Image (cartoon, rainbow, N blue to C red; front, side, top):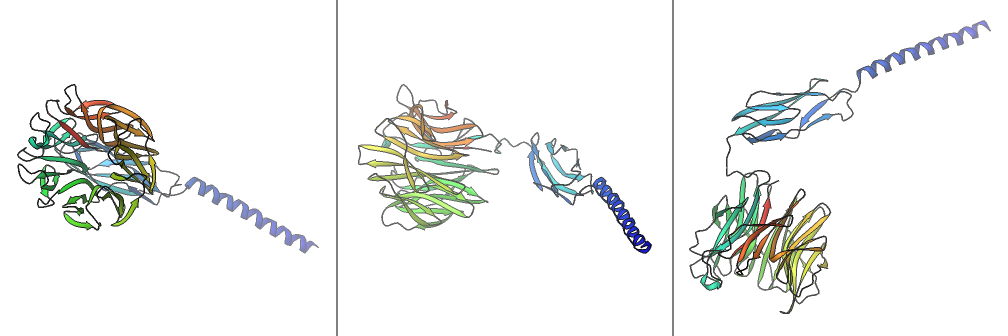
Length: 428
């Protein structure tokens, strides 16, 4: 009996020792915490102009590390850094280093500071593409149009006016400004156009002046430049200047291109009868209840594909149409001639620019806002601001190139000559 009691006593002593030992281990672990194993930055290189700022974001691993405190240092006084906010003080190069206080883990970003370049696109810049007549005339055969680019309301001519031209679409990517449009082949050319792409004001011919050559839309993705348009009735997609034909049964055209991931979406049609959406060159007919349909714009948001266009019943009625994933929706309007020219999606909101019986209109989620007497050709949403480009008639029935910001009009031309704004892009 004594031996059995002694045996149990030994077991109890071992248990007590084990409990106290484990408590000490837990206390030590609690004091030490979960150790940082790595730190990384969302950018490894950065280019800023003098006076600009940018924010570097550090990611700590594991995410539940106990001590996530870090320190920031710069190798050159040309660049300062405070809590990840980098400021370009003067021209030069600096290495920004973030170091964890726990584990001494480090990550770096090389920052290059360049002198201020007034031509370099900057965040918040608003670019508009369009055209202006060179003389105050309204008869098309007598007028010539200059392709124009406005940056924050300041105009730049892309052509010299010796031949009629237009800038139809604009896209800004990194430090480069791309404009798609056309220029007539000869002074008197009415149908013989050369499809053009301007990069930072320098023109590249995409066609050789064949009948109805035109570039209607440009989109840049991962340094690849996509342009769509037509050449002699052939639907064209140019990628980095190399043309790809889309097969159509009859005379065709393409008005808009949008790139999402590895997918290239193009919208256009065949002699305004069949409205088509091409995805990677494969055609899908867009169904409508109208005799003739002209799709003008495509936009991709997540897995949803939106197309805006106009349906015609002969020459008597026109209706604004929005397709979402191929399903048609008529946009409301009180007039007989209602047009939809551009679609833009921001979050859960769908914006469409167009016209209703001579009035420029912006639809937001199907609800129309009248902007004035004229036409809205393009819409772009940046943050809480909605920009619309088009034209407005003055008291002398001259078209004034106009940019509306949140419904407030800014005149881009003086009204002495007809002018139109065809496309708007805001640098994010």
